Image 1: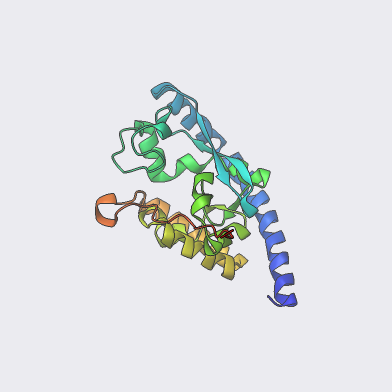
Image 2: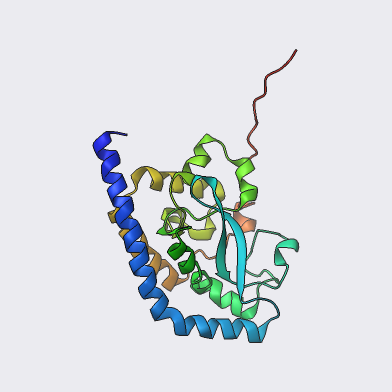
Length: 222
């Protein structure tokens, strides 16, 4: 990357961080009543915690706790499909189903943005278990902070397999700009309002996680 281009990118990343902080502070003030209503709805309709905390992978493979409203029964990750979630998954609560369709379960991630774990826009943060399937290309999505929404979100959301999502993530890393971020945010609002591509179609497309484990090369003593 040329020096001037790198300098411009660093400036844009700094502006991106300032925008994240300003936007999140405003969003938290505006959504605080909604935050309380959702918290009450979760607590009064199902057992378990209000928030769901999960280890996720951030920039440069740093692990952090991601916050979401709990949409499934306690211990769901150890039941049936594990990390995979389908539209009629019995582990999803009634309130959780609505939260997922409207993406309101993501609201607590505004706190992650404020803490600097993630940005408003970037590749969706993956789980640590996926890293063993990453090769050089896949690792490139970790060169920038993950986000609440991203290019893969507006190109297919949860309806496309991971290999395709990662291609969009790397495309975002290579073409990052504040203008691209703005377009992604506007497109995300439209997609969420239409409630499109919330779940993956297993029957039509096969397993959503279609990456293969990377083979580590070792020297032979023979």
